[in-house]
Length: 159
Image 1 (cartoon, rainbow, N blue to C red):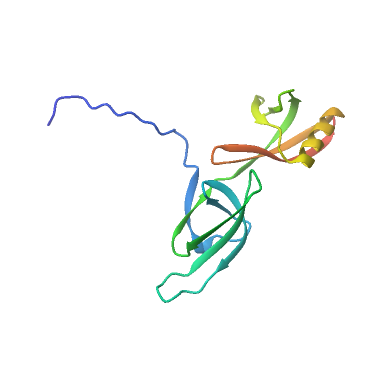
Image 2: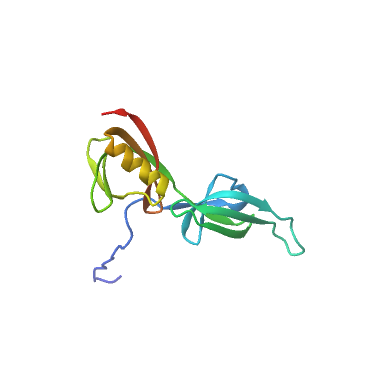
């Protein structure tokens, strides 16, 4: 045995994994999948028959949940795919700053100030108009793989 002390540097974060493995053949339409390191929602799945050399293949057509781009992937149905942990959280809108960031009220009563306004034009105008009219707005924030974005809006009445 050696007497010297070993030092280990940990570079990993303490949080849970951003994805989990799932067999490609079990992923269905409206499920989620990781394609090219992007979290996507599956819009179409087709499975080919087993060929001369074995595996049936799944052809996925999916849309990136953050930027709306269409991505495709073909995976053997017996292999594992990465599936992102997707969370949706509702926050009350407190303020919109000039630089395009929003201030949101969390469940615990704290504020969340690190989110930008959405890039989707219709949602953007709905949020700005509703806020300008003094309505009480609740935004839904979708988060997956370390990214967050406002994806929906609810009007809960005047302030």
